Length: 600
Image 1 (cartoon, rainbow, N blue to C red):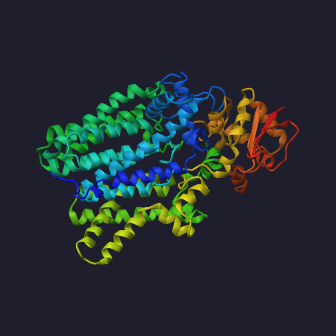
Image 2 (tube, rainbow, N blue to C red):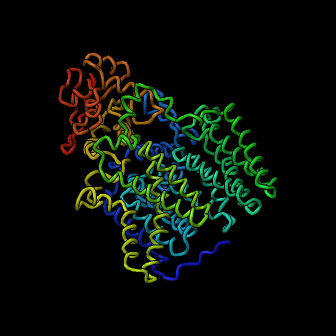
Image 3 (spheres, rainbow, N blue to C red):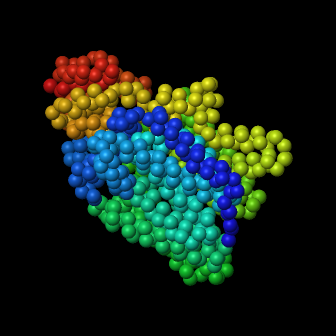
């Protein structure tokens, strides 16, 4: 067993905590105070808070319907109560000390910082497992800096991505340190089950970690029998507990894989169970026998999956209406590829994520080769997969950053050790260069001159592609939303990026918000927005029972569509061409560019 003694220097041992505390204070200093935070949320965080409010207001635990979004009756969201529950608990806790809005704001502040603390602690453990006692604290401190300013860990980030990062790291730690701590494989299995229950964004990375556990068993045989069985206990047991505890009725019927359903849970449970069966029966047999048995069992699970639950074999957005694909998904920044970023005027600092991924991929594979280390090979494969996912869709870079942190930490610690041992100042300078390479604020300074990351966050809303547009936020001010909320409840027509704010700050129903399960509502909204004439728009408004229309004079969504050739009624309205069947409602909010119209 590998032993990792504690660092001798107290400062080194506390370095991750010091770095986290500093980063957390900087984030808190830039965050809006109190309930103002609720007006600075991104779409997913706003939608999550709506779900939490619904739960606290008495909506059924298994009822995931968003009845105020889309066409009449709403639709079932694909998100998990596993995130709603702790957030609701935090709100109820802070209710003891403040009114509900302040309680919500405090919950929105605490949750992402808790997730960041977990990520820093887990990266510290992974760095220690890979590089020794000194590398762990350096890795954790770098992780804090690497997520400084990242929208997924700023106050207000309560969607689910930060929790998925933490669970992926727990799974990875449990796999690579599986033989040093007996409970870790169980925790890793539980992390796999919990992450699948939350969402499928990291599914390829979770699968690679699981295959990594199988690969270690194939390579080493009997010594890996215990870790594999404990991992299976955590994963299969976790799925057996979480599925009935979380899955709505539709999940039992299946037919989809964008959420926790039988199509996802059953193949994973059978696959991990097959691995455990092989480990229990043939661990002492030769490699050829082990490989043959495992491949045979996996083939059986694969055949059963193809026959009974094939939904997860296709891309989650494969069933998206082509009309929406051309007029919505094509313009979603997070869904853009690296090729799209290169071809357009993307902010240069975004490419730092990919350069970091390439650097850490090369380093991890180099360590794997020189040290003949399966753990390093697994890390390299994961980084390569995350880099591929991030190149396909920009949203994947959040996992790439987390996986890169321990690699940078191990390398920086090794370079510092070389400098400390008197090998020359070049080693110290190299350690400093690697530290700067790991920190996004360095990329911003290189791409924007003297601008700091904090200034960049203040200017653009956040430092990652998940951030809400600052012009959009300028429309949804407290005064403007108070005016909307004061109107008799009705149906609102507004661009998709407005939908979650309408739900969060009023009691109205809105046709559209950027969620792929709301295809009927999004198409209805686009029929209104892109209507060729005011008469066609009026007919669509009447068809869908719309009472109010919202226009934000600074909103980029309609102008982006117009530049791509999809202009129409909504763009004309935003430009000031108001037809007679719309009456503007005063807002008493001169600071806002939002315009509210009543449909006559």
